[in-house]
Amino acid sequence: MNRINKIKQLRQQLADWRAAGESVALVPTMGNLHAGHLELVKQGQLRADRVVVSIFVNPMQFGEGEDFASYPSTIEQDVAQLEAIKTDLLFTPSVQEVYPHGQKAQTVVAVPGISETLCGASRPGHFSGVATVVCKLLNMVQPDLALFGSKDFQQLLVIRHMVEDLCLPVEIVGVPTLREADGLARSSRNGYLTDDERSLAPALYRILCKISAAIAEGNKDYMALESEAMHALEAAGFNPDYCSIRNADNLSEPNGEESRLVILAAAYLGRARLIDNLVVDKY
Ligand code: PAF
Image 1: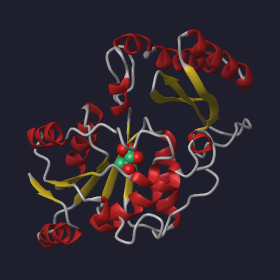
Image 2 (image 1 turned 90 degrees about the vertical axis):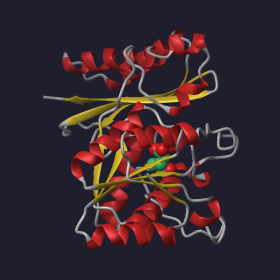
Image 3 (image 1 turned 180 degrees about the horizontal axis):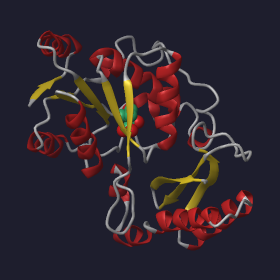
Image 4 (image 1 turned 30 degrees about the vertical axis):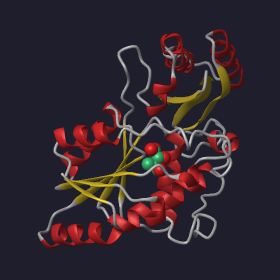
């Protein structure tokens, strides 16, 4: 596997592949790779001739007091895992390479509305940081497709919205969440959990499943279901941020017209902020 840090060299390699008529998939990550990331690479390999993985812990998407400084970095294991599944290229730019004018002077991409609710309400500026870096990575690599995990449901919708609004010529592929045997969604932040917290963590998914079953049985009192989920999260040892039932296409409040709903939750367990979601087909 080729590992490149500079945009110029990245573009040279991509130009060679393009000249040979090969298609390219991009998997943007922040490293500390787990089976969920590797699944994105495998899905990319099924759809394109070449797969580029980027590892960049993006300072712009972390707020004050968040875990930027302590975000887990496991580059040697990441490289070994990517090599084992025959990834073509690993792009690991520095902060200086991505933000050459400094972060304060960086042109930003903002996706209004959808960025301001749920995780965006708790983490102001987060989705603008995500949209900006993803837009830059898409421009650096110019892939045919880019793959993202569906655990970050809101992030996926923000990126789709940005790609549509800016007419970026790329297909965005959302890959279903990979879970542990007990239901816990794979996430780099699971590494923050102590053994005791790890044993409590699958309750998040179980609670989402319970709400989903109630909706499938015809319960339309979404406010009551949300409040039930918040209490259940507290009782299970979480410090819940939100649990919300929304239109799965645009995260608006349900009005009866939507065909798919999504139940989204974010909750702290110790220092880990865990998120998860479940899509419910209404009919
Ligand atoms: O999901 C992530 O790991 C990050 O938000 C992403 C998409 C790589 C942007 O930094």
